[in-house]
Length: 231
Image 1 (tube, rainbow, N blue to C red):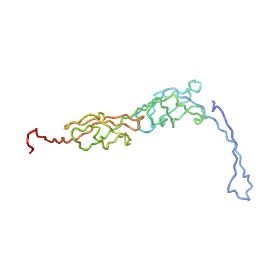
Image 2: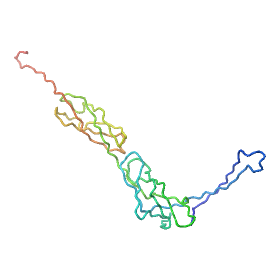
Image 3: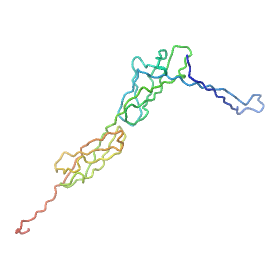
Image 4: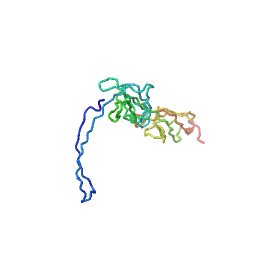
């Protein structure tokens, strides 16, 4: 087997400590350490990663075919005598942000071979062909509220107060605004549409929500007709 592509040898020197003065031992120690590069095994098929909706984490889920992973060497030749077991593997996207074609990192894949003396530590898996998509999340909205306004007031002049947007247990910043600020609400209404615009527009969708609007009828001052005495 070809265990490694290149090898580097380094000489390390050190000194023993806590050696009694009377001990007849050489305190100087010299050791040659040989470091061998791992042989790259490319993952060429038999495995994928599940797409997901943005959740602020890099957590990823591998999906491995029944027949297992297909491995090749760097020249593209199929490696059939080494098997990869990903049953205990942990995968992560390389970023938590939404996007397409996002690569992954994988730890915990076990390599095996029937050859006596096989050393899996001399190999490294390349998952460069495996990628997935993280889609934007649509926050769950707790609608803002308004103070009671006077009939005839446009929505743009009615302040939206509070409200929040969450994905899972995390609250995200953003702003609420009226969808049609020029609209004059009726005294009797089923609410009007406000829009949450997230500060993190790369990972979150804007969301519409209905906000209840309470109105007082506008006071009317009676003006007597000409010639009619005021009462």
